[in-house]
Image (spheres, rainbow, N blue to C red):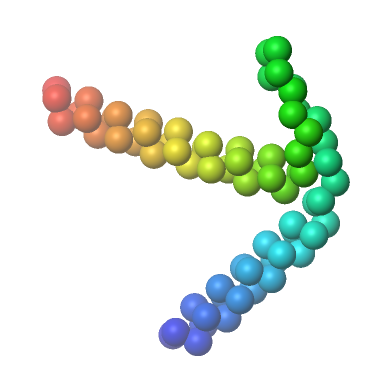
Length: 69
């Protein structure tokens, strides 16, 4: 089983590297009064991490409300 897990981890890392190499182009992202130029892959990773944090926060908030009531 650990060989399957290791193989899947290697495949995931290869896919991430290929994705990163194909999305190195710089793009401009604007929000309200500010804008920033960054690579596509950086924007995607930051959006993913913000989504994870906000999702985790909503789950914890929901648990807290259920616990209170």
